[in-house]
Image: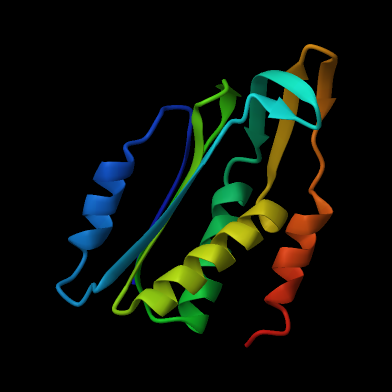
Length: 154
């Protein structure tokens, strides 16, 4: 399986990432992608900037573990995770997850699994700069519950 993990400040091209996953193997029958963007509002506050920090080395190691676990659970032929750091503005893309597989079911489930675990296990810290002031964000309970739902799912 081919893993690609990038933590970067620069924007990414969803099309280029899709094309790379698609061309990974002639056995690829499905590519599922997810891209997350910065919202302009969160908890009724207008977001001006979302600042993301990470722990270099440790972050990539955690992302690799998540992809390895996904490939243990499903037939994954290729996987890409790109997460941006630094100052991002409403409308900017934050994260890209792409999964290539022979079949759509494996690709859909692996993509959802990776996102759920990325939201709760990867070492990223987020600070929103809003009209009301700056605040560090914590993991949402709904994200914790989504990740926990995979614990009982072999």
